[in-house]
Image 1 (cartoon, rainbow, N blue to C red):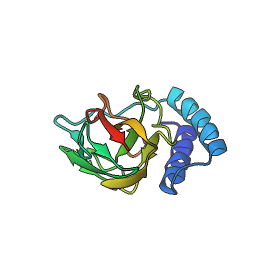
Image 2 (tube, rainbow, N blue to C red; image 1 turned 135 degrees about the vertical axis):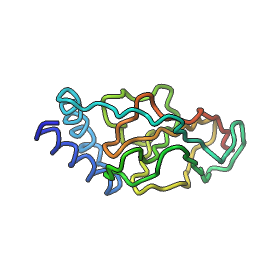
Image 3 (tube, rainbow, N blue to C red; image 1 turned 135 degrees about the horizontal axis):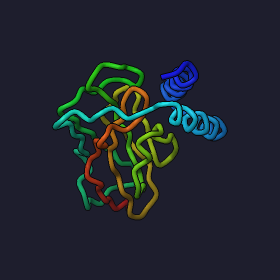
Length: 160
């Protein structure tokens, strides 16, 4: 990784560790991340047997507008973003996302891509009434997916 890519990576990790970027910063970060990707960011190989899952709510469940989502992980260590321990990562929750992000770019940080860079194992969400999908996507220290991606099955919930 060249010096520019290392600096961009460090900046991205710092921003996400502080709770995510502002919209303007997110756009700039995405631009720098795209450059860094073309400069040699490649996804790490997924450890054999690594998996993530959503423990609750259950697929098809009807829930209130405030819902606690509990995450599980096995076959790989859960570590905070920025921790470069081998065979480790942290959760990202995809909300109403149909397609996984590109492998060679950091997972976006927006209302549909929630980052849990402090190695959290659950979150309480406020969702609007209707049908929503949830899926976990494990990211490495750089917020990149593994190759192949370590993702949970996508579940559907119904919010009253």
